[in-house]
Amino acid sequence: MKQIDFSNGKTAQNIFLAAFPMLVAQVLNLMYNIVDRIYIGRIPGEGVTALGGVGVCFPLITVITAFTNLYGVGGAPLCSIERGRRNLKGAQDIMNTSFILLVGTAVVLTLMGEIFCRPVLYLFGASDTTIVYAEPYMRIYLAGTVFSMVSLGLNPFINSQGFSSVGMMTVFIGAAANIVLDPIFIFLFGMGVSGAALATILSQLLSAIFVLRFLTSDTAELKLDLRGGVNLKLSTVKNIIGLGVSSFVMQVNNSLIQVVNNNVLGSFGGDMYISAMTIINSVRQILDTPALAITDGASPVLSYNYGAGKYKDVKKAVFLVTGATLCYTGIVWLLIFLFPVFFISIFNSDSSLLSVAVTSMHTYFFAYIFQALQFSGQMVFKSLGKKKQTIFFSILRKVIIVVPLTIILPHVAGLGARGVFMAEPVSNVVGGTACFTAMLLMIMPELNKKKERNAQNTL
Figure (cartoon, rainbow, N blue to C red):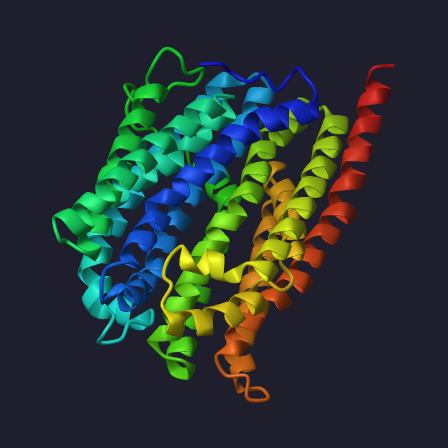
């Protein structure tokens, strides 16, 4: 298993070597939930309603992802920075601490979720019709929380060591299992949405086993080793949470938006509009994946070079990533504009649903290209350990802009349900531009000063 050496090679080459396996891994990772939705949407006579039921589960699933990112995304850049400084003991301590936090939090979330599942789903927008599908799916999914959090939370630590191909395999194993098990449980065994959830948690279990085996093997540069006992250093925990809280806030914000969307759409359009939003969010997850793979692939390269004092390479990586994401999001916007029915029909081709979803999708993706600025700006702040900035710009776009607009716009000029879909392009323009501009004004001068200081020290 080849390890990428971030200290050598061209910046663009290292980003590509890290990003390509991550792209494959991210595409495969989508299969956990996307494949579920594709099969669920095609359950005879129930597909549209079942999609709405699974859609109201997303906010709760997103909360689980938020805690996973709090420790995984929070710890991995710190781990990379310590590797860049040649402090392997410190890097290993960060990984061990993140693992303990992941498992402990997973247990708590499972217990709390099972106890309060039904009332929470109603709070998140379930109706008496969709709760029949939402509750069984969510209860089974919650049982596999520890598998999900361990596999997805520890995988960034594999990537941070340069083993991006192993990180890709982690997701491939689970996704392949999910693709095979979904139709068996949903259709062959007649389990419906419950079968989809069961297939997902069994797939996540396989991924978790693979991750743990690799991180305890001799191949890994940094090993997961708790034989010395559980020793949580408060300073390490604070650093992990301090950096990971930005991603946590972003995911919680996504959950909040999903809750608000479901409730407002339920009031102005009913379950059909919730199903349409479920499909649009699913399509966006698919189309976001390459851009996220680029930024995730660049992140350990930035973190390592920042820790190693190679500030010229950091700047080069920033502009490479920005250019790549701008090109990609522009292409995506064109495809959505020309072929909306193709993307929607992946999940369901019901004529009533299509009439609602096509117009809604055009509105939702109208300013998608500005999302590239958000991707790049957030990636730089996160990779360089800028905690306050990552948190602020997560809150700005989602909470300060999207949530109020989602509530207000449906009441303006008779927009109704369409106003919910209009909130996203406005947030992309305002939030994305603000994030990227702030990154340029704050990070670039800092890198220039550090570069000059290094040059003076070598004289």
